[in-house]
Length: 189
Image (cartoon, rainbow, N blue to C red):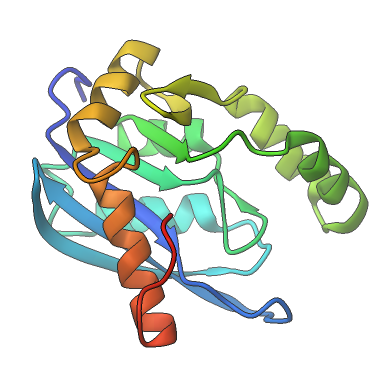
């Protein structure tokens, strides 16, 4: 898919969960056509598991929005704790760009130490984070990207960042996930 237009996007975020939770964690995708919310996707992934890439691909490919989607936003490279997304494989599978967005530069050394010392499969997960590349500053946020240039990433963030530095599909997914999980949305993404 040509990453030049990028007017239709989906943003995914996971539901908040208690620290001691084990098992599956819900996640939500907010689908946007320009500035308009078009729909919502929902799925489940394993807490600290390794199925996020496959579940995200399946959600997008089986959705009625698949034909029009041009970009996938992720609220961080890991969902449900340390279920790390292989953004390059996801981009290749979906044949469209994937853009990870975070408000701040992640503490990569602390993440590395935790993955290598405390998380089953941590070496593989750390390798996926390294493969994604260092987060790059763009338009007031940090991004990791697959399938698009830094300039295209900046255009996409600016195009969808309507009410904050966070692109609206991610902001909306965060609000929906928090509202459903706890009864009301909380804190900014």
